Length: 537
Image (cartoon, rainbow, N blue to C red; front, top):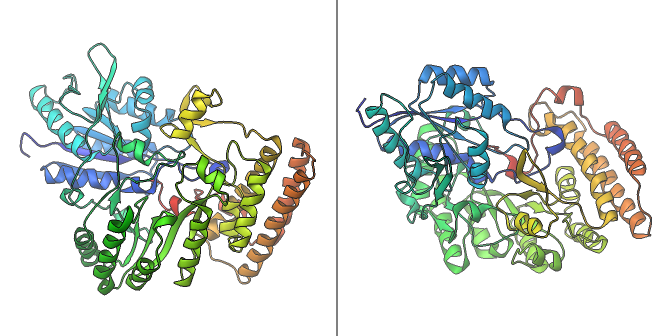
């Protein structure tokens, strides 16, 4: 190996999802699943020896991960930190152990979570030498070059301070221990990035993930896509030709023809976005592939959808979020209920039943908001499928550090955070009747997702007659929601004891209806059926 090259290990750390959070989306955008792959591609292009360890997908224990790190003996260890609804004390303790054993000379972390929580992480874990902010590829490459100089000159010591003034995009401690950082300007030409490295574990997934664009031209209050990329962030796209070249290389290497675009905003803005999508569709048409995308409702147009379906589009997630214009304005969606309904109609005309993002309960939701949301879902036939019904009849607004909603509630003094984990905030739903309904539906729908995980995730075979049972349970769930809403609208307030009784009765009936076995399912990690949770890394 040349003196200027390093042995670099990239780690997707072990993580789990607790049962009570199994239907919470948005812990990290799906686009993050290719972070390590893109970093590896960039580092390999610079001549470094790079390996990715899939601690999550390969279900490694920390002991197994320790063995992998000890065997590889990296000069530079990169950890893609993904928030999984809990304090990362186990991961921090593990990294302290790695550093104490001198198994890695330098440790950096990257991803959505560390970008927003850099000071917390550097303050809590002395083993972490730096945090990469935002897009990691160029910053990681420059960091590797700087560490390479320190390794060669100091016999693999991490004592040499890396100056953040020299490496934009890096947060770290200066000589006095103060945390300093400077954001990097966005990459302008995404076609210049080497294709991401995909591990065997990634290729075991049903679909091959692709990233065709970065960022978003929207500004939703609950989203931290743009805060991740930094001030002045915007939607940026790879060329259709570059995307198709990557698809061709994957088909040639693996034979796989099922893909999923992890872009938060597949189309991009205005006529140029539609023209690009049409160009991509024309190139994909002859490839005989199937693919899914995620999009804003205002970008769903008849001609473009028709062309994409002809090219292989089979699955789409659209962020409806609400059935009331006032709520959409509060969320800064920059869309309308009419656009929501038009998008659903266009997709169905072309044979696509959309997955939907929906926030039934906001911090400031009124019973009128909830009723309007419910009627919207019924009117648009979005309460027919149990997996979708269980998702949309309970989903509150998740508050993560870096989002405008988190900051607004903090400024208003309404945000509550755990001192040991300020990354996620909570707030009380202002209307006590809405809060009661939200609590009840959360417990019932979480039970459904946990109870059915083995079957819905494909780990267990679906029994004969399951569809009829799903329909029965779906009708019961809808009736439970509506009857409880009517009770609250009539002026009654459900006490905690009444909620507990209603939940217990509902779960008992659902157990009788559904072909699940909770005892079997507890052997497996719990995932949401929602497409944003296809891959938590």
